[in-house]
Amino acid sequence: MNTKTATAETVAKDILPLNGTDHIEFYVGNAKQAAHFYQTAFGFKLVAYAGPETGVRDRASYVLQQEKIRLVLTTSFDPNSEISKHVHLHGDGVRVLALWVDDAEEAFRGTVERGARPAQGPTTLTDEHGEVKTASIHTYGETIHTFVERKNYNGVFMPGYVPKQSILDIEPVGLKYVDHCVGNVELGRMNEWVEFYEKVMGFNLLLTFDDKDISTEYTALMSKVVSNGNGYIKFPINEPAAGKKKSQIDEYLEFYKGAGVQHIAVATNDILHTVSELRRRGVEFLYVPETYYDDLFERIGKIDEDMEDLKKLNILVDRDDEGYLLQIFTKPVEDRPTVFYEIIQRKGAKSFGKGNFKALFEAIEREQELRGNL
Image 1: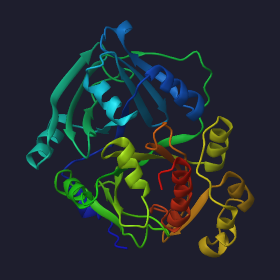
Image 2: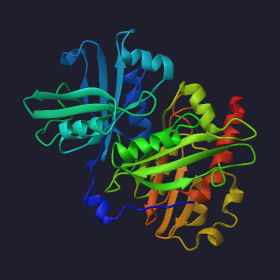
Image 3: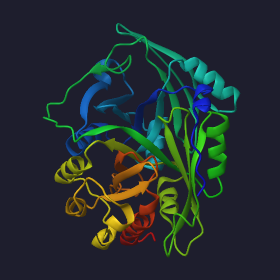
């Protein structure tokens, strides 16, 4: 495994300064019902809305927030729109990974000059609360990155949206921020997209996992992790590798009909509380056999959490040179076996749970077999 870390000099010369993830927008078949799911199951609060009542005639969008995580769920009313075509082809899925910047025009100009394919040129949206500037470029599949500059805006989300609260009494589950977003790409295209992030967006190659690191008896995959200069944005990129049977990446590509966002990792400061709440609210997680915990302390060393609590909730643990992390993965949250979530708590560790790969992918294979897709 090759490991690189961004140095202070690298950060100082960051060609695309990013402040973090601004929002993640899903194109969905029924935004109102999807918003209900994310409120009741994941503890997000409804904060803004755009639709016919606000003068938007062709779509409805619901903005949900929990701490620094902001999701936008959008449905089109026009069956011939790009949104409807996206949903028809992919099912509910991530269309926009929006990045918070200080200068959207400069971010767009620089990335296009370095080879990015433009999706939408610089646009300024205004209302009584100020202005938001946006611009977008294409990345893998039909996913786009939208640069969002909001330093001159103090509204709820952006112009075109109005504040909206649900009548539901929603309690957050402790989710804090987006830790990383994982993309699945076609066989042979991982390095192409890693190079895109390095050359076009100034990211650094952080980690490399090959099929020796991520494999089981039946399936394998390759993965590389890229990160921006300050480390706020991390994108692992996966591609399938040769195996005896169909890998989870192959299954995703087959059902999503191409490359796209596979999972979103969201951070918590108390994974025991967060996962307990999510389970209580009906969120389903992958199952890892209890034998995983038999030699946990020998593999991981001393940790703060009680083994029985972890075993009861089926939470995985891994350690690197800087500490340890706790993680668990939901089952797909769509009917298609595509998008899912990772819940992660970092206690110093900067890695991605390499020690859990085998147990995790065997758990995924069990689900694939139930679906008849292994």
